[in-house]
Length: 572
Image 1 (tube, rainbow, N blue to C red):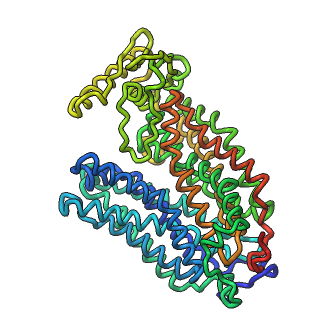
Image 2: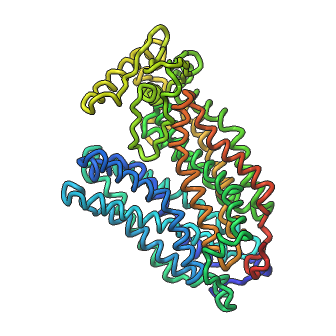
Image 3: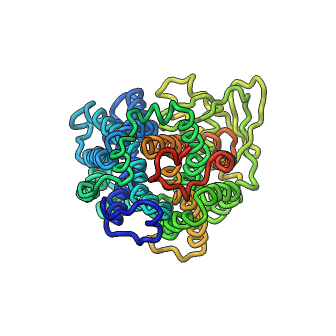
């Protein structure tokens, strides 16, 4: 782009109109990424009912696993495929391909016939679309960050790339609003029947705008300079990951920056939502509205911390955010409990519940796809208590073949479902859950109709004491997110030489966010079920965040003053 001046003389120059277009074009892809992610996650039950429910359980489980893989596990492979293309052919071309694949896949989900109409073809096509989308997403973020950073003046990359980070939250917020307003406009029955398609169909507007803008963009100046000099890589994957001088930077970027950023991101925006709804039993409308208000109030931090990172460095802000989050998560989530459901918080502190079992008969209930079955008596007991948000301890009794739950003076034997016929399992589990619920209520745990749980009647019902305190806590969690996420794009771009930048930064980003971050809810729930402590799952983000602080402090260099337009010799 001819209007972009390279090098140090660009330091004080204001943002041009063309650069604003570059940021907008790049950011819309990130909006797509998180818009679709939240759509599919929020509507998974409705989509499952339309595409998977009439198939045998084994088939449903396979489809669920593949859908999960598309959302998280295949993204690093997309990073390799499109990162290689971006480093060899160019940022603009690759950028256009990824947005077309991603946007088209999202839209086609909205028009795809259900399995009632076309049978097995429906879920197969849905999974193919999800896999294509996951691959395209793997190349989208690296392209966006690289494209914007390579257009940015020296000394302002943190500020410029922070706008990409804002749009991640914007995508979540947009999807949240569209789902809520569609549900309100159509009613629950129509929404389940066909209205769920509307949010997917509306994505065509984002796609049209994105493609139109990107077609007008020129190649990034750094890539043009490299291509003109003939210094671009012929084999970016092998150069990035099979040469130790480059591979070690990618490894340290993953463990010393991205892993901590990912768990803080997911804790502040996804685990907080899970904790409010699943653990604290706040209704979905109130939960979504509380999260929405926290996003509105806190999202300006993305640009602020991106700008600040140009002044004081990327590392102090990212690692500082990880450290502060790790040190404060436990008191903040306990305060969240005390405000959102005070009766439940008191029960956690005062009522003793034990699972009496031989520990050798228990499993670690890690279930990221929601399809695994844990059918031993111990697993049934622990899962029932975890779903009821009960704090419990395990009383080990060697040689015990079954498991029982002791609540006060009541001792309730858990059914051993794996020894039963499939038709018997449902009624047995339901009877056990009813016994547990009755005993918990008798001991002092609040019933499902507990009036002390925070509740919002409309989006602006925010001025009660409970609502204000909760929005304050959630906004603080979002500010942690903005600290770690605002400067991360600039930091990753600056770590790697131009010739392999797209490939090198994309892989650690998607492994960190897709695996370390994406597996957080399932891992945390398994940790809660394993220990009986509703707060124990927080040790997962706390441990990863502290690991990132240590590794980042000693092994990741500060990069804010690097000239990314210099030759590869400017980089170790």
